[in-house]
Length: 407
Image 1 (cartoon, rainbow, N blue to C red):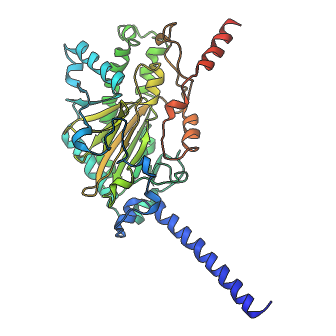
Image 2 (image 1 turned 120 degrees about the vertical axis):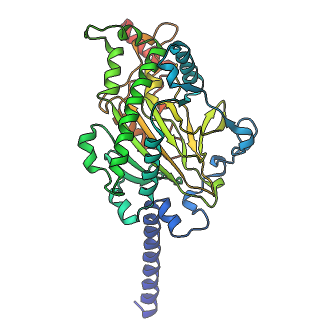
Image 3 (image 1 turned 90 degrees about the vertical axis):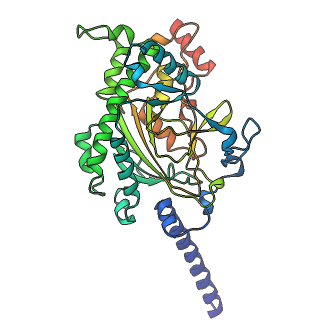
């Protein structure tokens, strides 16, 4: 082989290696998260985060309006007064709760009893975690979605074709005594501030879910049983949810974005679980899909935004709705939110309540479990994480079930 050919071949290999190294370097940069990119001084959104035109937050909605026009697409969610749920007006409050879950899948809970000190303390330490040097944050970085403590970015950073403008810290919270030693030790007061918040949101969830089940009509009879006898499958769900259930805290950080019209903080998705309790700062960003439009939720100081999860929609046989929602970002201020997702134990099979199934309201959902959800979430891109749609029974499914019953 001539020296010229050797030189040419060597140049081609060198160029190919440089391209591969460049691609690898780029992937590593993205894997480290949005905060890392912003700290490096980027002035435009990298291509990896730019959504196709029809998936961007400024795309036209069903009403013919351009999403993101706050003057036209803000929504005031139903407000449920927790104090009323605990007092003589409980029946009226339960009706408001049922209306919100049926028609919006979301509501804002006020007068819930968790102090501003506990909430602001959690928001403060969450923000300081994301302000730590990358060398501290990356100690908890993992692409394993089943690990109990995980720092990451986007939605599914190993599968997403387009990344979303979010970094997160996910903490499995139950059993707390076993998991707490694995939680971040920086900032030094992280655990001290997070533990009271986790405990109080769990207690709040217990009371809200009791009201949810009562509003569905599946808990009233069991609630009157003071003898200690087994109450039956539907009433046992309270114990499974509260004492043995799963609790996952997701701390989200959305940095300022130089081109917020090109990307999303989180793409459209429904929440896996029974109920989600969301604590926000004062920066708007949450949007829900309502009657074909993307509508921005107005934050209420001190309130929790609570939404129906996939498990509750399945359990209620479709009466309560797990609604698609997403997060938009902005160019002026970073945003912090803390989502506390509560549900049945991870190994539990979720199915519709027998008390909510009859001839006029046949079973509408397949049984499901956490393994099925992980399989789903690992198999799809970030375009739309609508797990609940994959669990709905078709007419053919129902005919098959009916045939099995008559054979």
